[in-house]
Image 1: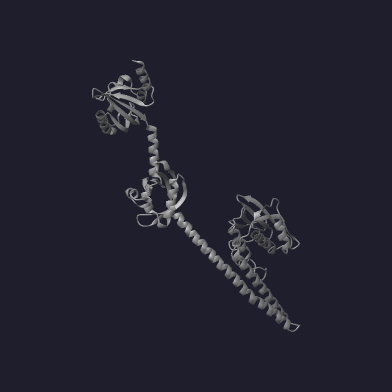
Image 2: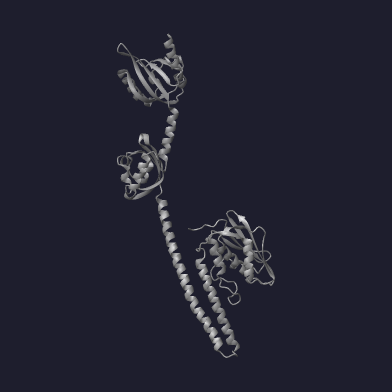
Length: 476
């Protein structure tokens, strides 16, 4: 062979593509090393093969037509084929072919195959994911038409693929959302991505579904790759929650107004009753019968009790709805301040365990909780001497506080009711109070996402445990 022929042979033999030369009868004239290694045939075996022996059976009719056209026309457009190796492995290839003529007749075909098996496998896997996706996946054009879409479009919107492809997609968009949708398409045509865009698409039955879109453009090809998620139920839930929130705010405002008016209207006659009782006592003779004095005293006590009950009802109605900016609270110091304000018999000591937290929180509601628990521990203690201990521990994103005493405790049969309104273990005549204290504590604690419970102390007494968040949620 000449130097030029040697060079050509060397190039073909060492090329990565599969190269073959075939006679008009389909017999192999030459195959390069990549061809032999990929298909697994030796040089001697090739002589007994025809070009169609290495083509997948399903692909043979197409390849025979291509071969006839090649012999007739001298060249054919690039085409795809599936080859089969000696071991039976399928090999997807892209091919280009031409025919060499001698004296006007075909002498040999020349074909170069590029192995695209791995790419085809990836494409098949992506296609499978595309078909199985619950989200709506599509390829659209900046001309306003869908080019390709997955079955989720048909399932969500109810239209067939043909119906969706033949109409401009803006026709499916809710009229109110069309201007913004067109603006987003213009943005995509300029090569800018669109993230978290919402619009409504009409379904075949005339309803509308909310779709949340994420899109990326390929402006040089005029294409848009997009994924949409049906968020109709989420939108309905958001609207329902917004409506309920508005209704709750309205109801709370009405309750606040009612509580304020009721409190004011109740206080006025109570003040009048107290004044009248004092005037009666002043106008009566100096030496009043003991029974009359006793009744006047009881009348005054009942007026005070009613005034306290009115105040407690108002506090209960407003508990948890009055927002306050968090401030730094030293809980040990807070307990000391409350102890100084309470009427504590000399024999009862209120103390704090070491390690009480200092943190930012809403002070007033926390103070109200501690005030009521400490007041109850002192008020219901049955011995002249005793102790009340406040302690805390970290419990996840909450502090767990406990207020324990060595008083008489609370019988198990009463523990389910003590947090209800107007519940007192002693009669109203024996111990001052309205039965609202623990109900108010429970309402405040639960509003802040915590819980409160009671358990027995050993050998006697009760322990109230409640949780309080490390970070208070603030409302705008």
